[in-house]
Image (cartoon, rainbow, N blue to C red; front, side):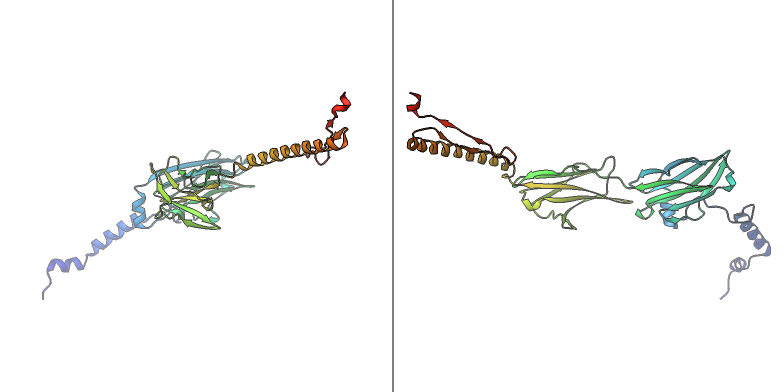
Length: 324
């Protein structure tokens, strides 16, 4: 079988074409003045994730430090969806900027040289750019400037907090109650409710007629519990799922019997009944003594209102014959 001349020519490139390809590769290869590889402004991502990152919004944050800073500077950043992040730290000193060592860490792990460092006047700038896609990239990112002493600035990335009820929710046996969780200015992908059985969280069984989960808005969830029993009391947790992490909040439910609020009242009534009974018995005892003694009789009531000291209060009865 014969090959076409055009294909043979394509298989054997001419020397002139090879020289042209080498020149193109030489001009495209990155280089630096000192011959070392240049610093990369971004963390490297797989090709698929890099294409996704082009559609993410940018989050830019900065921290300012000086050689006289006495405490580390921290900044809390709330994030609920994937984003491109640009972090900048600036350090102002009266010393030699070339003697300042700059490093970055994520949590306790030191990052590679994929950050930029520049200087303007007496201020040193360092910039770190990266992409947060999931919970693995969340956490604390810190810049360090080491001169005579070390100065640190930290960016803390976390998902939005949930808000429930700070105080215990009190209800009564047989009633219904509604537990509510909200996420201010955020929209979780999914909500889940748990109840605590000892130290174990158990998903609330919505298949039972006892529980109803609903939410009018995407940033809140409600758990309705009907026909309350005393054993329904305890801790309930609302759990929110975001693209870059999870968040949860707990609500304490206290279920009381209707007799509980009546206990103080019943105690007072019991004391009053005992006191009235004691007075009546004393009156009866006094009348008997008056008939038999024919003179003055005394009735002593023992009081417990004197902190352990007995007060004897005599009650005097005079015979009618003495008054005549």
